[in-house]
Image 1: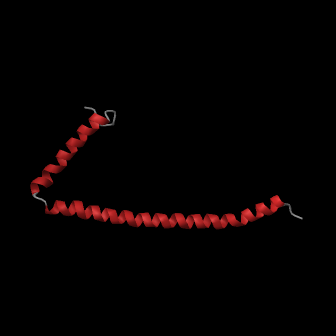
Image 2: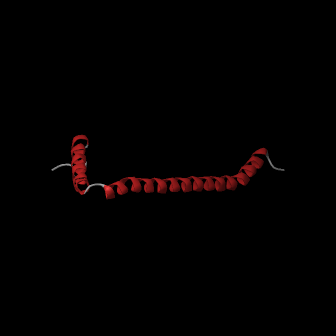
Image 3: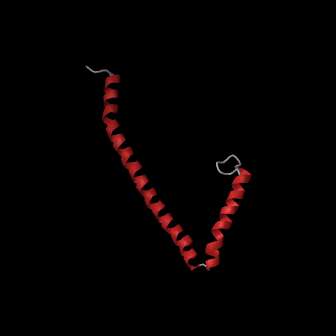
Length: 88
C-alpha cells in the first residue's frame, strides 16, 4: 500500500521530464525567433547605413568618422572619466 506522499511524488516524477522537454522546446523557439529578428535588423542597418555611405559625397565619407570619434572621446571624458583610455 502506498501513502499519499509517495503517490504525489510518483506523479510529480512522471510530469517532470515532459515539463523539461516543453521548456527546452519553448526556449529553442524563442531563441530561433530572436535570431531571425536580429538577422533582419542587421540587414536593415547595413542597407540604411552602408547603402547611404556608398552614395554620399566623398567629403562626408572621409570627414564624418573622425568628427564622430572626436565627439565620442569628449563625451567619454566628460561622463566616464575613469574609463580605460579616457585619460591623457
